[in-house]
Length: 312
Ligand SMILES: CC(C)(C)CCc1c(C(=O)O)[nH]c(=O)[nH]c1=O
Image (cartoon, rainbow, N blue to C red; front, side, top):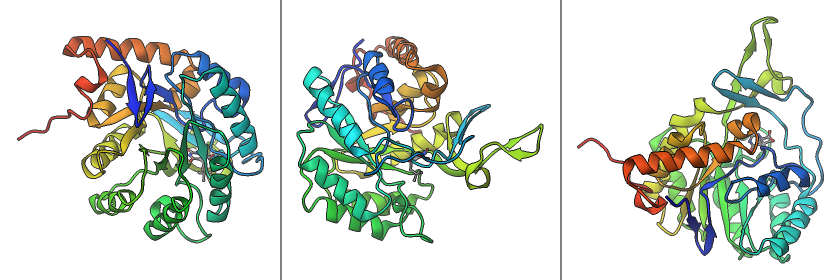
């Protein structure tokens, strides 16, 4: 069985990769991902300047996943661009992803210009969970703002790019978002980011588990699986076929990855599991996905990608 997959002109020898923000902050962590069985990697969402992020505890493992309010800690765009340029020289056959999350439209556009003017030849993931003007929901939940950001971006940006979306829960939102995304030359849409603003409690102390935002944070892990499947499926049904899907959320084993691919995913990102198990998780996931494919009689990802059946 072969886990080869592609997005646009980019070929990957394995469907698995990290979710942005997980074990991808430093060159050392990124090198560990590069040396793992993952087919590619994405850097921590960058801002122009280095950020320390929120005070700890800002991540906590939960019974069925995780909660985080990291606060966008990162080494700054130049650091990740530098890593990417060195990486592509040493690994010409392994395209990677740069993630960008400006704290304002102006910052996003400035970073996009810097990337456009660079020799980076991989793919750029614009994180639409980035904040919007205060008092308004995150960019991904503000359709007019999303339209504006993408219009400005693609007025000059020509490198391969996609967006990382927050989860949507209403079918009309899928319709509205897909209608916006279909207007732009996106190579991929990555669904989903963490389930925004959950809350969990320490039973010993009756205290919120994480410190920032009074304990509010994004939920990942098994809790996210049914939402991730629905978002990947809904966009797969609505987006122009030129726009590939990346599935993120709830992957704990090979079957979870298989399900995201059935829903339409061309690549599968791993967050909470990678955080907890480390890069060796990719070796286990690869083995387990191959086993599921063998059971089903499939030898390639294309044999079953998007082939979810429904009851008639
Ligand atoms: C939530 C933001 C800080 C605006 C973006 C970065 C981010 C973070 C983070 O850095 O807190 N955590 C997530 O689960 N998803 C994200 O996209």
